[in-house]
Length: 214
Image 1 (cartoon, rainbow, N blue to C red):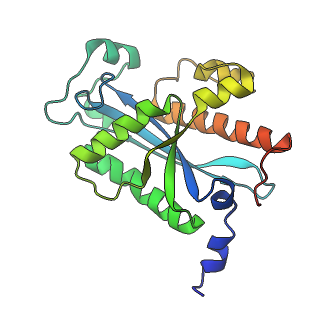
Image 2 (tube, rainbow, N blue to C red):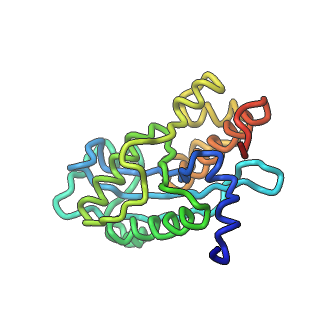
């Protein structure tokens, strides 16, 4: 037996989500088309169970991203999120560097927990999933740790749990503070989405839902 094999086999996270590692992702973009519009910002949050058996937010990774060569920049999208793609204050990095900054700790977490693959958790998850995979393809990253089509969508989960589908309203209904002035920043939105996801999972468990260990 390898030195850490026993601890990996006992990972509550791996058992709770059938070998998938939930990783919360949010992106800010210059439009809605993942193939043509620029990815401008990306953040990821890792989660884990604490000593009390509650799912909680852990590490956050965040990067500002340079528009890829030839990327479309929709004026309406930039006005909405308030991002100036060419501001030097952003300290933006290439899509490849941004994704590797996120993929590396995700791959390590997959290994540490004994999971098979990461699954993207997002609010309107297909949007974030599409941009992550399109950017990974442009950057020619072969080892994408995320499942190619499965996601956990907090829009659906919040609609079921709280009757709300807007992130701000769902958070407030769940008792999670939300600052609308700070919204539409990938780091902030990802952390709030992570808090919402954790709260829903914990609430389900408290109500007698699926336990951590089978």
